[in-house]
Image (tube, helix red, strand yellow):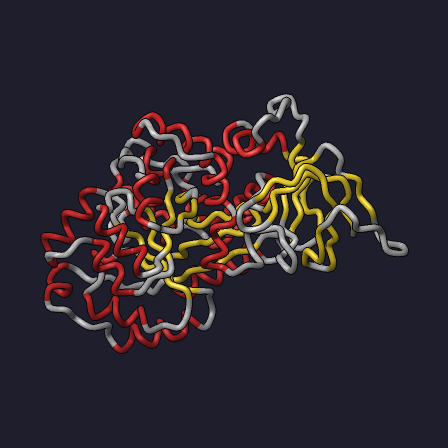
Length: 396
């Protein structure tokens, strides 16, 4: 397939090319350049007036929570989503698998329509939870990165005693890691140093919640005399989730340990838990990505996430983040964790793309393409979504 006369956000830096041609071969981008001409019998699509950009990477979501949308909307964060006592857990435990499956599928379809082609899910429920998501997303043209977890948590007494992971749970963990893409660890306040270090030895991707609330930071210091982030790093995570209340020293420590940071600004706002200081994170050298977080609280919409982050950062810190930086957080920055085939449009990358109507009523005239996408574009400005070289939503 040859896509002609398209505007393009190219490569890891999302360089804007006013007009070029892109050849798609099977699942991948084969070549890019204005001089490309059609092969014999090759399908040619004229994309004059369209902007081709990478599909969004939703770097943190709890998609299973789709079944509990807006339940307990006025409750505090602990009563909502605590990994042991939150009523979210009761909803998941008491729901029929068929119902969970149906709402997970609906959220996958919703994400495709909004240009999300890859998502990283924190999957509760042990191996059963992993299999529910895998079955629910089967046949849907979206890429789930499934981070599972075992059904085991420790209280403060076990944490203070540095209690190790029980042998039965080591067996559960061994079975789990064979069937998912990585570990989605609830947080350091649920595990001893010994268990966190044991997680670090698993040769798969690891992510962990950290410094999401002031209270979680306080509990960590009271229980262990260490910050939550200091303890989270014992698991040697690829991703630290939230970091809303991480100090400058914590952020510098994360950057030195090459742990990426996923911010979820709308979820933090909805839970009245502050807004991540993205400027400070960038100055510390952290690689930043964006997640929409819990579907019980938030719709999985990266357009709304980018717009909210751009404006609330200015409103709170009086320093505006560049729209291009925010767009990279929603796309290309994920390559540091997921590899160069995901999150960019360049040679040999997956052909996961969004085609934006440059002349849409909300975007024209497009004087700044980055700003237009970050705070004006929406599901309504998408002409088509491509996943691995196939149009899966919309049409030309």
